[in-house]
Amino acid sequence: MFHMELFTSSIASGTTTPQQVTYFTPDNILPKQVNGVQISPDLPFLMAVMGVGANLATVRIQMASFLPFPYINLSPNNRGTAFESPPRIWDFSAHPIPLKPTEELDIFATQNLGTPQTEFVACLFSDAKPNPLGVSLNPAKLTSIASDPGRFFTAHWTFGTALTAGQWSIVQPSFDFPLYAGTYALVGARVMSATALFFRMFPAQGPKWRPGGIAVQNYDQIDAYNQRLFSPYGTTPAGWAVWLTFYQNVPPQVEIFATAADPSGEGWFDLVYLGPSVAPSI
Image 1 (cartoon, helix red, strand yellow):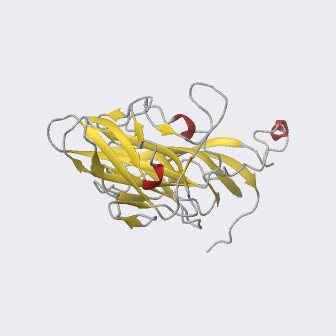
Image 2 (spheres, helix red, strand yellow; image 1 turned 120 degrees about the vertical axis):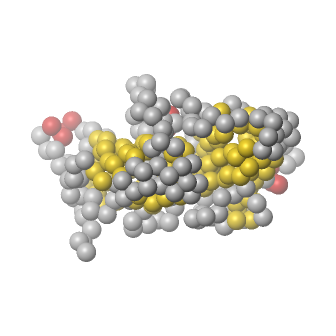
Image 3 (cartoon, rainbow, N blue to C red; image 1 turned 90 degrees about the horizontal axis):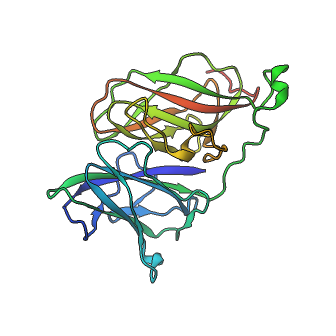
């Protein structure tokens, strides 16, 4: 399992002196500690780091327990008002970085605009145990028994709820076609709106963790490589395993962080059908 938290604040210019980017606490799940985040014993690994800012230069991950080794300094990052395409993210999912539970993790960054500027850095924290799919993906017998587990597809959805600038906004996906009754595994996702930077799931039935990724602002922007089960490059499927599972009649909502009040947007869920179990209707 994995979970996204956000750091954002205005920092002064300085290409050699990192400035702290403050943990964003509106709608946070993990507790704040000073200006950083307190590491949860349930999510004691750093899985990925994704930073974006108009003139962002470097991102530094800082914890007391990293010493006497140097702090983790990350470059390149995304320079602009949207993630570049392909995006520059630091994906440690193959070898997550162990963190000390209850210790403070801080984000520092540099930018070279010459005046103060707001930077945005999201971190994915994990338990370092990918949730296995549990079924064979796209088994050959689907041609004769379409409702057997393992069917992969991508469901497109839209939303018409205006986003709040500079905050996490919850939207309810409206699917183009209703999902077949049963249970599904979310194994990848894409979200797009005019100024969106990040998104994360808001599960209807738990767990409390909110897995997420980078958002895109245009149709031709490429998602982070492992954010989708299948890559547009046609390479071997990898992904971040199972994000969460849900019944078709209680899909997750989606939280979106955008820099302006976007009036609408759309998204795509990469899904695998797991079986016929459903939740009782309300």
